Image 1 (cartoon, rainbow, N blue to C red):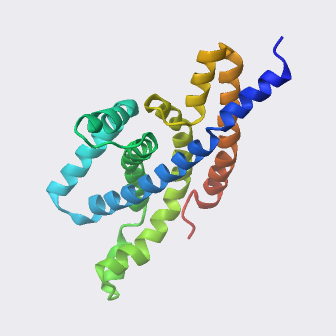
Image 2: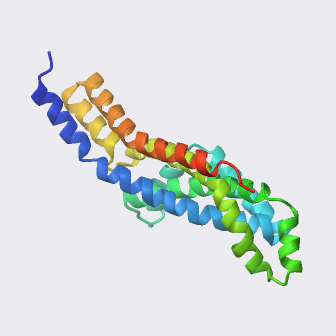
Image 3: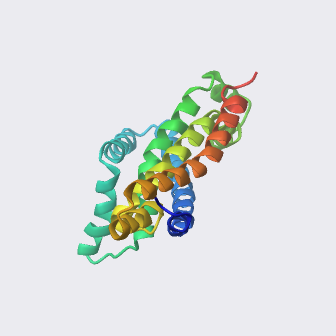
Length: 219
């Protein structure tokens, strides 16, 4: 029977990767939201066919190629060309770019859900296009997009487990290392799953709160 001291050492070992997991999640989410919002603005309002096609193509590539492939290209592929990224930098950049394609769709859905006459009314009232976009449309679109962003944040937290494949020292990296040395497979991976659950639950609560409060536009 496995003693408490062994279990405690496993928990200690996995907690060592907790900070990296949280940091990669937050940094990737910030990058994804910033770039996703920029792409959504360009796709929604630029009205230039070439830009629209380029954004659509980039989003398709980022969403439909496995995340691990993108991470390998950034970490191993760029290194072979002389551009060496740390594992954490490659993880944040890779997950952030993939997330940008996802959040772009979320933000675009927010803009598309707005009544069509608002922009025309704002322009007719004398507002400039930029004032209309950022002062009238964006706050409402963000309100609609918040629940979707919350759901994406929960998914992103779980997706950080793949960055262990490029030696980023997060929870699953330490879990795999300890399994290799101790062979306590079930206990180690079950403990790792519990840690991910403990991290995900608060995010899920926030997401549900946002869903209740901002799930639909109020008149």
